[in-house]
Image (tube, rainbow, N blue to C red):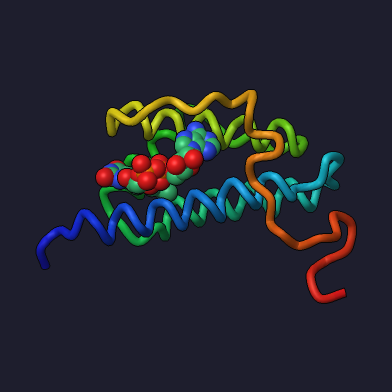
Length: 117
Ligand code: FAD
């Protein structure tokens, strides 16, 4: 099938949105189980990402920049950094990671409870 750049970009935007929002909601003080869950999620995300070329590039990035899963700040900063690596390769503007703090809001309302509670 022919490459469809519009669909690929749309998938990218949706995926990054979820990715960064997940980091913004990761516990500030995760348990070991939380950290393992995030590490596993990132690894499987990289493996199963639907655009094959993107997935293999991203897997290389994970080797070079292992996921930082020790805290919310570490995870959000790491995700911003690897997204910037992708931006650089695609010749897109670099995002200022100091501004990541309030940028990704899940709209869930309650920061403490799980959704639906
Ligand atoms: P996007 O890069 O999608 O970013 C969306 C928004 O996120 C931006 O508008 C900005 O507000 C914010 N943002 C930008 N940089 C950051 C940052 N560093 N941290 C936090 N927020 C930020 N496309 C390809 O053509 N080839 C590839 O190899 C490729 N690999 C990809 C790998 C992964 C894992 C993902 C998720 C996507 C990949 N994409 C790839 C898609 C590509 O990264 C973009 O999503 C797509 O090109 C649309 O770009 P965009 O300019 O709308 O902004």
